[in-house]
Length: 241
Image (cartoon, rainbow, N blue to C red; front, side, top):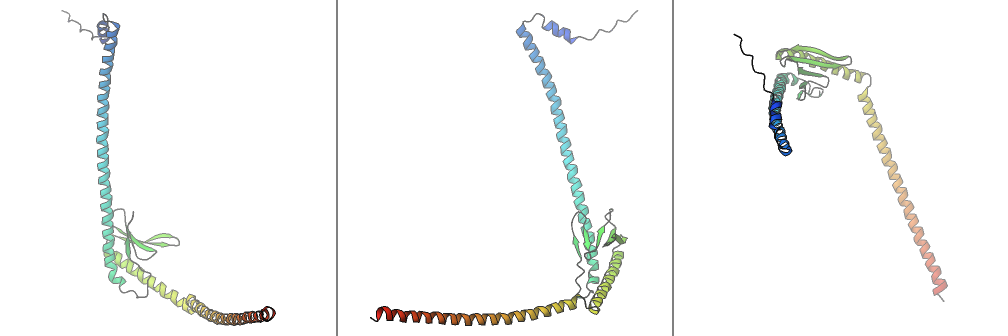
């Protein structure tokens, strides 16, 4: 016994044709408008779903960005705290430096990469792992790494040796300057020349002011004498008769 074949799918176009078969033109136009309205409503529903999905994605992106920014801020704060801890450990060493030595100005400079400056060419910063200290120095041949360690004591030892070498270089520079008649003596000579020049200028200024006063005095006397002669002449010519 043969099984019945499945019925073919219903053709909606035929149904639409049958619906509009006996309708007037106005009714057919109204039916087409209703169908277009239904289709637009379905499209609007899918658009609303896409907009809602995008809004949720934006909220998630903002939340992730805020978490990432907070994490970066926390890491930077941790770096600054570690560098400040190293600066506190260096305080007893810097207290032993000469009082007239001003080449060391230890302090943390916050920024994109926080750094603990020892002087204007040596500084300490944290490595990429945020735990390892890197002691660097700028030289004529580029930036060199003096010491790299995660131990504060090791960094203090390295920076102490660096400070000692810098003090010896300073003493040598001062000794060479004094022995070769350098900038200090030149500055003293320039000061003496300036003092002599100021004294000469002061004396010449006094002489100039005295001569000007004498010239003004005689000029005023000559002017009043001329007025007296002119008055006497007018009196004899016009008033005596």
